[in-house]
Length: 133
Image: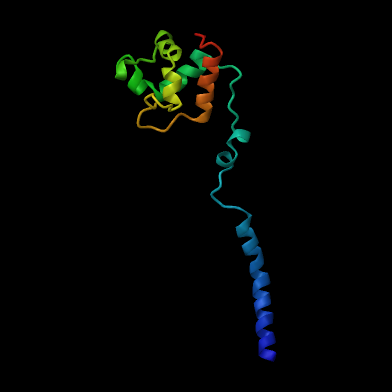
C-alpha cells in the first residue's frame, strides 16, 4: 500500500512539474505569423487614393509587363500605355482575366492570382472611371 501511495505521489509531482510545459505548448504555435493570421488588421489595403500612374502601373509592372509589354506583346495585348490599358478595361477583359472569371484567360498566366489588395485597387480604379492620373 505504501509503494502505491509513493507511486501516486511521484506521478503527481511529475505531473505538476510538467504542467507548465504543456500549458506553454498549448499557448500557440511558434511558427504563427501575426501578419498571415490577421492580414486585414495589420496590413490594411489603402484604396483611398488609387491612381493609374501611382497605383495601377506598379501592379502592372510587377505582374504583367513580362508578357504584356510592347516588346513581348503576348496575346496581342500590351499594358504599358494608358491607351492600351483602357481598351482592355472598357471591354471587360482586364477585370475578367485578373478575377479568373469564366470565359477569360486567367492572368497572370501560370502564376497565382493577384493579391486581394491588388485586385481591390484595380477594381477601385475601374469603378472610379479608370482615369489617366
